[in-house]
Length: 212
Image (cartoon, rainbow, N blue to C red; front, side, top):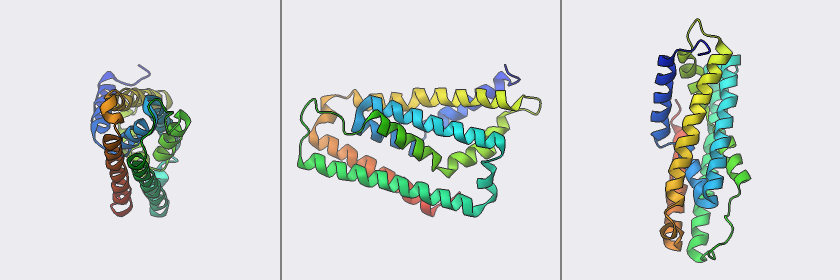
C-alpha cells in the first residue's frame, strides 16, 4: 500500500483516535461552532482544521515545520498568536452566553455562526497551533519507513488522520445538536456557552504559559 505497511498505518490510526478523544483545542473549537451554528458549522470547522493539518503535513515533508522545532522565536511567536486566538474565541462565547441570558432567541431563528465562519475558525485555529506543527515534525515522520515513498506514504497517513477527525469531531458535535429542545433552552444554552468560553480561555492561557 504505497510502500506503507498496514501495521504502521494501524498504529497511526489508533494514535489519532486517542488524540481525537482527548479533550483539546480542536474538539473545543468544533463543539463551540456546533453550539453557535449547528451541525453544518461544526462539520465546516472540522474541514477547516483538517485543511490546516494538510498544510502542516506538507510543511513536514518539505522541512518547513522543522523550523518550529529548531527556532524558539518562531515557535513562541506562533504559540502566543494561537493562545490569543483561543482566548478571543472564549471571550466571544462568554459574550454569546450573556446575550442568551438577556434575550431568548426566537424558535427557528437563523444560527449565529455560518458554515464559512466555522470553517475559518477551524482553519485559523489549526494553523496557529504550534503543537500541531511539532506533532507533524516529530511524530508524523516516525510512521514513514526508510524504504517508503515519502510523499505517497505521507498522503496516506494524512488521509487516515482526516478520516478520524471527520468522523470523531462532527460525531461528538452531533450529540450536542441532537439533544434538541433541552439544549435550546436559554438557561442551558447560556451555561453551555459559558463552559465552552471558559474552556477556550483556559486552553489559550495554558498554551501561553506552558510551552512544550
